[in-house]
Structures are given as structure tokens and as C-alpha cells.
Image (cartoon, rainbow, N blue to C red; front, side, top):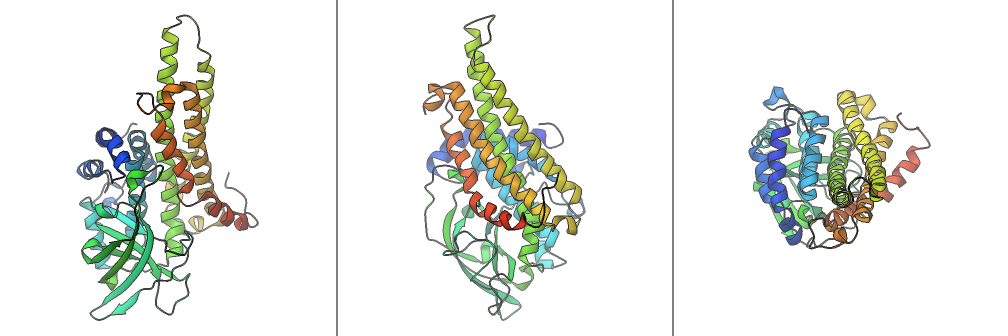
Length: 382
């Protein structure tokens, strides 16, 4: 990685790597890495210069996420999910003083979490049963039974979807910024999963009363399409690229070891390694292109709202979630039994478990079902 964030990303990744095995083993949030990201200003990197931040582009955030994903997939995912939520504040928060205060929390390194699904909803994010309920004193109340809230114990605020009002249809949603000081969280489930264990995505019953100015003025469908989905999909893909790159590094290390035992000959596994690198480069090119594309149209509401762009964003997520499994599996075959072992310095066990989690982060089947309808209206963006 090069550029203005390279040194800080490397320093944060080093902390993440040092604790990655423990974070995975204990299924706990990567608290040390989060602290390093905060200390290095990376949680606030995307805040616009006009608001006191560094104005990182999505292309720059993508490179940071990849560096973190190489070291610890959970840390990369926490960083990525945070950025998608944080960017919604200044891109869709309007001129609310309460939202401006939330942005100062991000500037100080506050971590933004999210709650966009409800129990019984099958993972759907486009509808809510809970609602924003006005109460006295210019405040609102909401109560939500959320099956998944990642890294909630480390967050400064949780961005929660809810119906605009008690009598609003399920699809008429708003996004509410809920500071943890105003939030009661009752755990309803544990997080004992195959991969991405450090995201600690437990279920919670959320109950909050907040300033009405913390209800973002735009509808959630727009916020999701224009910011949260494209940003999240690019940064998730970037994190998965880091997992794949780390697996490729381990495969290269193994093949080099083979080459040293037979000087003057190319090990048969080197051909498989070359094939793996083709797949890795293809994954990298598609991810970086998607990041640059968003930066080009970030302020173009028509382009962001186009069906073709939704297909593009979903396509990136689906393709890269499949690519990371393929690349890690290729690396496993190249390295052999040492990669299969859990007590080896060439182990790929955590890589493979995390890689399979990629298709679970908003199910590929759900995205394809959405795309099936859109595909009748628009083709791909080439």
C-alpha cells in the first residue's frame, strides 16, 4: 500500500495481526485493533475536510481495508461496516445540529454500528416492523428486536432502521442515530460462528429515546442505495481481497520453500501459484475499479440511484465473495497438509473459515433474487 494513509494502516494492521488468533478463538471484538485505528485517525479518515476530517476517498478506504483484511478479517470488517454507516451522517444528515454532534463523535474516533434487520424478517433490510414514535421534549422512542448488531460493545452509536411513524408502511423507513448513552441493549443471542468471529455480531433487544434531530431526514431506501450499500460492498470486497492476498502470500512462501530444495528447476506447484495470482489480480482490479467508480459519481444522485448501479454494487459483492473462497482453496491445495493443519505457520484454517463468511454477509441468494428483477430493466455497467 502507498499513499498518505499507508504508514498508519500498516501500524494498525500490525496490532490487528498480533491479536487476530485470540480474537478469532474467543469470538470477541478486536478491541486492540479498534484502539489502534482510533489512535491513527483511520475511523475518522473519511470525514470531509470541510467538517474537520481528512476527506479520504473510497479508493483510499479500500486500500486500508485490504491492509487490515490481510492481518485480521474481523478488524477489516469492523472498519468497513463503520465507514458505511459514518458516511451516511454527512451525506444524508442534512443540517441537524444533533447529526453534526454525531459527526464530531466520529472525528474523535467513535465507532458507528448498525441495526438494519429484525427478528422474523429473514434478513431483509428494506422493511421494518418497529417504528419511530414521537415523545415529549422533541424526542423520539424506538424499540427493536435485532438479530444482528456487530461489535455493539465497542460502538459509540448504533444506526437503527425503523418505520417513519407508527402508521407508516413497513417500507417507509428512516435511519436513526442512537448514541449508546441513550440506548438500552439486552443481549438475546450469542455469536459462535465458523468465521468472522471477531465481529461479535450478537442479537440485541434495543430500546432508546433520542433527540428527534437524530432521525436522518432522507428515506432509508435512498441512504442505502446512494451510500451504505455501495460503500459497504466495496469495503467488504476490499477486506476479502486482503484475506485472499494473505492466502496467496502463504502459498508463495510454500512454493519458494519447495524451489530451494531443487535449485534450477521450477516446482510443479509454481504453475498453480501463477494461476492463483491471475485470480487474485482479477479480484483486485474489480474491487479497485468499483471504488474509483463510486468516487467519480459520489455526488451524482441520478447515477447512484440507477438500476444499473445497484446491479454493479451487488455484482461486486457476489463475485468477490465467491472469488475469495476460490483463491483461499487454491492456496490450500498448493500448500498441502501444512495449510490444512491448525498448528502450522502455513495454516489457512482461519482464512478459509472467514472466506466462507463472505457469502453470508447479506446472502448472495437474496441479492441475486433482487437482481433478477432488475436484470429485466437494465444491463451491466461496462
